Image (cartoon, rainbow, N blue to C red):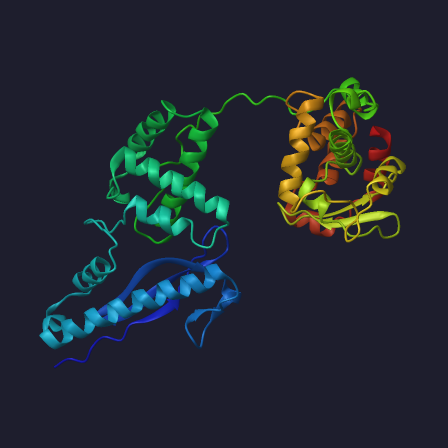
Length: 389
């Protein structure tokens, strides 16, 4: 009797995914090489070559290892049964691969494309909780539209357009565009795995609602800055007045610190040599901002015990939400992210060079490679911020 084919887990480093990770696959040799996508991806630095597993540093990585072990066990059990029954010796590599994929419940058609639902499941592996919820939303909409068994190989541009129209009857343009983006991400993973040759969603126009400009005029900004809250005692209690004053001051502090995000603002610990240095939570970009006198005045007023600025809520995310609610009482539609837009708009109105604005906001200037070798003069940003204030 022919020996059972040896199957193992490998990191396929032949082609990286768009995020720089590599797909983890099941590998065996039966007449020819067979690779089966697991839907799991891993960074090269996180892969243990000896154990053939992900170095589990997070809950998501531990979960992925559990998924991989489960898939390997299923395949080993099937291979053992096929070997004992004698079927394995008669099977081609293509037939064996199809049987293994069937055992793993990866629905495939003649062209070898998995279901869209499966790849949406793959796409959310290792993502943040909010992103997982958004992918789940996309899965639910796909299921409503065509069920869970829609094969990737059967999806063309016409299907994507029809799906867009289906969403458009129920949701706002930006929500429709977001749904199409999740589907496109799933299809890109199928391209990376080699199960389809191209992404059929590329070229399909995504609807876009006209975005209201999120910035205050200079006059409105001055009105907000100069607000007094003594009169609010008539209508609100003392704590309510403090909340409104805190919200106004946090917005102005964001503005004085070149549109710093509220989450980053709440995470600041100290001022070093008159500057605040921080890494933006959203992008990982390093910022260095000179603390202007106006900013210092607010910081001194709201000093925190374990942070630079007092955080009146349990978490940075909750303080952002609370501040936004209070800001809307002061001015309609105003929210914390208006500070960054307002700073950039006033900078443009003052004809500050776009390179300086881009550098101040952390945007890359020209070629990313060039930016490594060109040290931008930080004084230009400091002078621009002083001029704007």
